[in-house]
Length: 127
Image 1: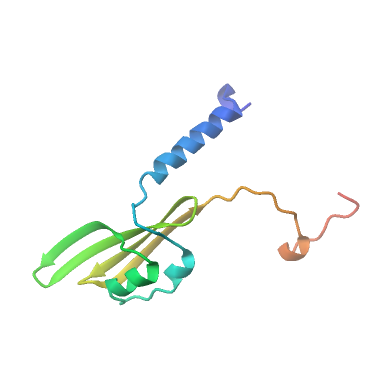
Image 2: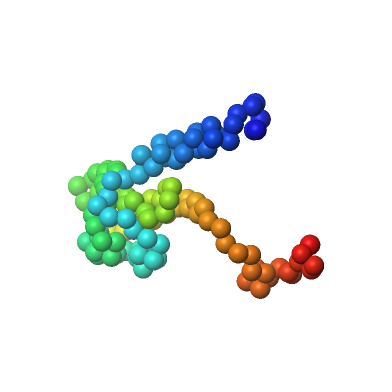
């Protein structure tokens, strides 16, 4: 039992509902981008080059016309991590000047402890 007498299944259901609400805020891009694609990008790339590198158009999240000669646009792409991943890029006159990557990865799996990989001392006599 958890505090206030809440069963584990109820806590798990609330957690999953929160993740689904969070995922609903992700951009509806035509593709999912991964961290390798993002790391291949460089500032001052043109939007068309970024679009090709990521595999699809981003979703226009914000546009601001500061003058006839200066336009700022923020595009977002859905990432390939679960439960939440989004990559944003800010373009001034179609040239990328800033990026933002928000990745929340939750991996549930069983792995065998290997002390040689972790740098920890293996237990003696099973203790």
